[in-house]
Image (cartoon, rainbow, N blue to C red; front, side, top):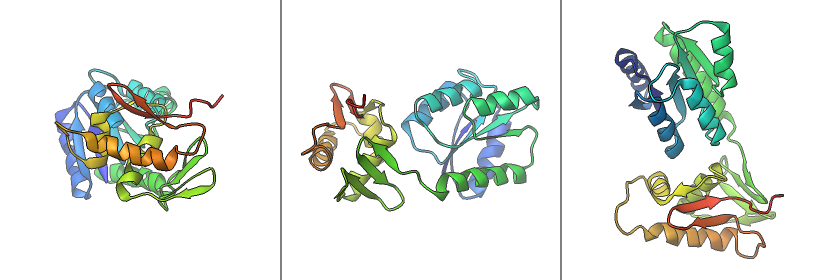
Length: 225
């Protein structure tokens, strides 16, 4: 499990990181709201602990941006304000739950567990046009015909489908699928995109994997209307 902590109060962020780490989760910390949004958009997290009052971008705005960009990672909003209107604004902005400072570590961990269970209980089936991917079984099909994928092909396809409509840069894809900051010859990505196109798009009138020249790739049904 990987948790992103976005908190500018260093004493609070240290407390949160210790609580997360002692529970056995990996924790990544940033104190800037804008940076937190960027990290959540380029990396996969199981949960985001998000403070409301942040430099760069406040927590409510971070929530709205992530949801608008199809980032569905569960968000636990951390606020020092107990006013009902603040709670409503937080939930309306896209947060899944909130906790009010000061709080006990037991309550924090209970709320985290609840959100993690909710996120892991039944992985949503991914669909783009007539392409279907079931993360629970790792099976794919298009037009009702099963597609057989290698482990790397599956990881690449899932990442593209989870980010439907978004342009993913080459470095974003390489970092997510191959877990490294690739410098130099990155034609391994082009090879696997070619493999996927042969399995996903070949024989179908509507291609779903699109090249964004000079940037990367995008998965989208361009003939959906």
